[in-house]
Length: 234
Image (tube, rainbow, N blue to C red):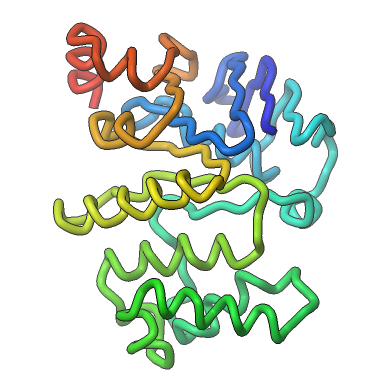
């Protein structure tokens, strides 16, 4: 599904990611772990086409070099960004509708909006409220649902548990686990290693812009030395 080779990402003169390679198979959940400043969000930005990058990013065998942000969305990439970044002044329903903006069947878009309101009744109750009035957890659910409104082939989740209460974090990971069970292809960026490894198939540890370790989530999660290293980093 997603194949990244020798990716380098720069922010002006500063290189944030140094030649990393990773793969996300169709229907799999792969987690990119690491501390703040490791290069995780820079990697997500490069996949979306909003960061200066070199190397190869392939989606379903097609090279995305030179492909615009808009065309990457059309090809099936959706992101729920760090910090959620919902449209605070727009209603909950309007946020979801914007997520489905690339789709032409408006009746189907409305059906999907109602489906998300069934999935998250609290969002349905607040469908006409500005997104900025929601709690942090509610905004995170809205951000994920908004990303999925485009019917993507791969969902990029950037720090979905950041800043949330433990009870809400558990709900977020339950949602991601359900999406994985439903066959969604997911690249998850997280600092919460223990929770992320429980719901993932494969993991990469990124630090200082380089991959330091990789392996199945089961193997990495079962390694006391690796878990000590992961928890020490974050």
